[in-house]
Amino acid sequence: MGRSSVRPQWATIPPMCPLPFQRALIVVNPIAGRGRARTAAAALREGLGGLPMAVEVFETSARGDASRRVGELEPEVDLVVSVGGDGTLAEILETLPPEIPVAVLPLGTANVLGTEVHLPRDANGLVRVIATGNSTGLNTARVNGGISFLVTGVGFDGAIVEDVEARRRGPITKLFYVRSVLRTFLRFRPSKLTVSIDGKEKPGPWAWVLVSNVRGYGGVVKLNTGNKLDDGLFEVILFPRADILALLGYALRALVGRLPGGSCKMVRASSVQIEADRPTPVQIDGDFAGHTPVELEVRPQCHRLLIP
Image 1 (spheres, rainbow, N blue to C red):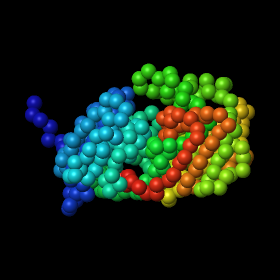
Image 2 (cartoon, rainbow, N blue to C red):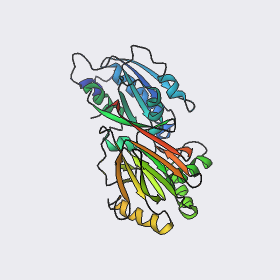
Image 3 (cartoon, rainbow, N blue to C red):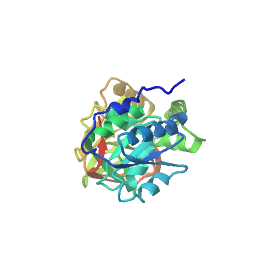
Image 4 (cartoon, rainbow, N blue to C red):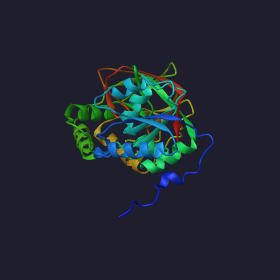
């Protein structure tokens, strides 16, 4: 039986003169997407090669591999592609030069950024995005030496992620997260947080703080904020209580799109400092990041993200 003459869909992309990119590095977390990431990266390599582009695929095997490889980029590389979850992208952004844009194939557990900007979840769709070269600025923030482009949380969600980190043995599923949420919900005892916004203390005390660059939270709900990825500011949501009854109330408000609201306050900021009366867990974009204090400084539009 002869080979089919049907061409892959990406071959129908109208030729661009010139193509927006010439050489790409694909960074893939091979266990993301329950093992689908490796297959997706191979499809991306084939699709981009057909544009044509020169493509290298780099597979990570341990934390820090992505940031190390991107920190050693050859001068000819003009695009980096992340295949994995938000954590893979965070590592890439740690060392990515600001003049080189990033494309994302979201295959993680929550995929908050992918949902925020409606990124395609398949290789063919991302090839089309790359072929057009359309992009937006991406705010990030330096947080205690790390980087945040989604949400930094101090208090309740930090405790959830700390529980996840302590118990994880391999890839994390949504059910795994749910169990940690329930355990933390029953055991959490809030601290008293002191928060300074752009150098001025916000009268409190506060029990839980979120500092967000996006409207999506945890891949589950949307915050009632005016976040934009490229506006140079993060939204700071301040919760006065974090006991069981208060947490239930916040959850209900979030489900109907009314969080922040009520007793929760929201301000916009370019820098945030958070201290606590005792060590309080911190999460940065879904990864455990130690305990308070927290120093956060926004870096406006310091990266370019390819979008549909």
